[in-house]
Image (cartoon, rainbow, N blue to C red; front, side, top):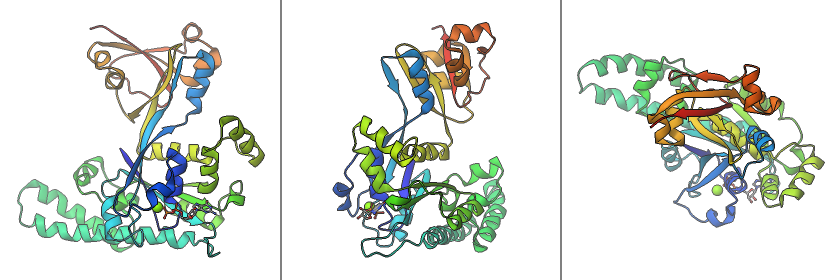
Length: 346
Ligand SMILES: Nc1nc2c(ncn2[C@@H]2O[C@H](COP(=O)(O)OP(=O)(O)O)[C@@H](O)[C@H]2O)c(=O)[nH]1
Ligand SMILES: [Mg+2]
């Protein structure tokens, strides 16, 4: 799963990337033709709470991969940038809302609309190329696809991104090979000036996000970068002075994680408290296989307790006593925040 930071030049993509990964944004700024990839921990208060309870030797967060697209794209939405976006599973658009070095204030709405317009045009091109190819093919694929593509074309022509078009699961499957840009989940990251981090999002930007059904995270890439470079103790002090409970980048990463439809299965004990990223809808045996293939092969049952109950009641034994710990079988679908213990036999 690849999440990409996209947007116009100077919006702060590389600075956000640096704040998330701890990598120097300047180090990558010169690479005109190469995207940078970084692995980022998904800070999770649930894992922290479980670790508080178990005092484990190890605490492990889920991880996601972020891509900072190559700096060489003149407009940020040129052909090269749009092509690079096709390989991503989700897009996070960094939008400039801070004054640049010349003192020019940002134009968030123009940037938001700009990316949407360019990605709609790119998708229209794709939708228009396809029928000429299908026309040469025969069979059921053609019959299924043509009316669907026609519907998509109509949506795009009326400037509607495909993520706002209602699609049946079957239709989604048909489209999965296409890499339509406006079908990719999109999260807006409003990069505000340093003195605005505690202020609510500007109402026009908030309205624009809401109207398009997009998530919105407000942060200052510069502040996040500073925070990332501070020792932990200093971080806490700095954040409380700003009136913030945690760095905004933590919230942003969690938002990106949800964007790609990953949920966290949790395991907890004296050795390790850990979040395991699994796709939403994963049945218990398959989820067990993420931990170890033996657990999937020899799956007997899963003992499940929601993390809040475990933290509140203090132990699995107590959860069992009061009936909060459930025994689930093969068909159980793991829920976000389930603390799971697998019983297996190989
Ligand atoms: N004042 C301020 N400057 C920022 C902020 N974020 C990025 N910048 C500056 O804006 C310029 C462009 O940032 P960069 O991350 O390279 O943008 P990119 O082109 O989207 O990768 C750099 O000089 C950054 O230091 C911010 O939150 N506040
Ligand atoms: Mg950059």
